[in-house]
Length: 259
Image 1 (tube, rainbow, N blue to C red):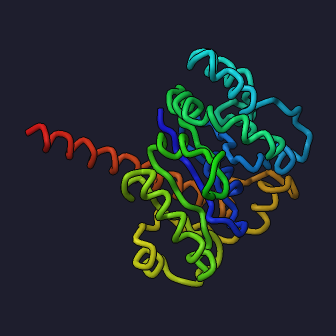
Image 2 (cartoon, helix red, strand yellow):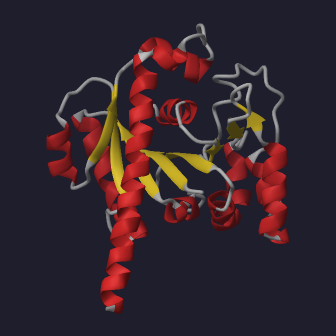
């Protein structure tokens, strides 16, 4: 199945909340993997500390030296359910940012393991920064990378160097898109023209639903009917569609060169 990655330019645009909302509305079996080197938020956030803490990503990284099969088996053992049916699963991230240095050499192996899973995987990669320890292997293996950002001038300025980093990493912008969150300070067209990357979808500033997903505050009933979740469903579809389009262009290019 496919691996999709979400990143942030910083400034708390809601990357993890967006990843959760998309996961909870994904139409196919899916796993949300916390790949943020700064540490995971979901166990203490949406689960409010009530879910027994699995080793999650750290446990998978420990198996990197034993090969893909051992990593995949460990990942299956470390998954927690996000719903009662087990349709949506969760791989917890690091519990301490100091663990990131130990995981860094395993990112590519982790990414290849995630992309080979029998279900789609959404990787929450958190804030993208320069330097060692970033989950670059996950980003390069992803079928589509989405930058989650607000449409403010400050966020546009923060996104610009991250887009340059990702463009170099991915070999272009074909697998790169933007998800806009919250109030529309600038239009999608303006942001696309300024940053040279298309806006895949926009999500509303639905504070009540975001509080459930980010901090476990409020009722979880009827989540599917809330504005954020409806928009997240459309955003997920847009990400998957963009990935298919990019793959089709790649195949067309290969066939064109072959001809």
